[in-house]
Length: 233
Image 1 (spheres, rainbow, N blue to C red):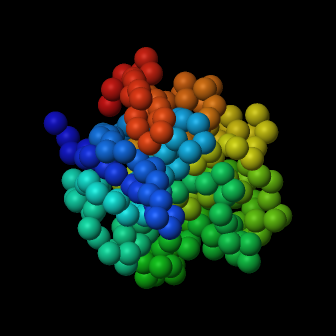
Image 2: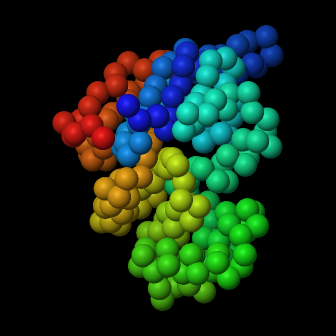
């Protein structure tokens, strides 16, 4: 059996507000295997955003274990988690999170810059990804000169530039019209078909239907974790 990309064991996340402790995750167990496409659903406050932050090494567990690619990173320092984020995790956000002062190529190159990758190599890789995303004629454009769909394509290219172990998407079509959103979802389908491991948060049942597995949260717990009629990886 292959080593899971994600493995949470009795994962607990609590937030403290004065004397009040709020449990956002209540001892969950979750496994995501290589090449899997899983969707996370649940009402506001159910724990799905907390889960995504933890998987993306943006936050620490209060207790329990998080293994990423077989490595237990639960006790890593903030600096260690930052290194993991930059090298092993690709993010796709609803609001794109592009740097407005940078053009398309520069935005895609940002993760490589922080890794100290030589400029020529970074530029070659960024150009190839931009062309793959259909942005060959937009390389020097700033984010505000792009449509929402084009901005999300830049964000996807940026998420791929370090060849991440895990891709995390948070409502990636939430700011897009239906046609453009479907184009973005087709790109994500292609990445999954190529073997990328993807975890996506969504509230849309139609989007969830594209994934292999749907993980539903309520009150910080997983209430269902069902295969979606698609073959397991």
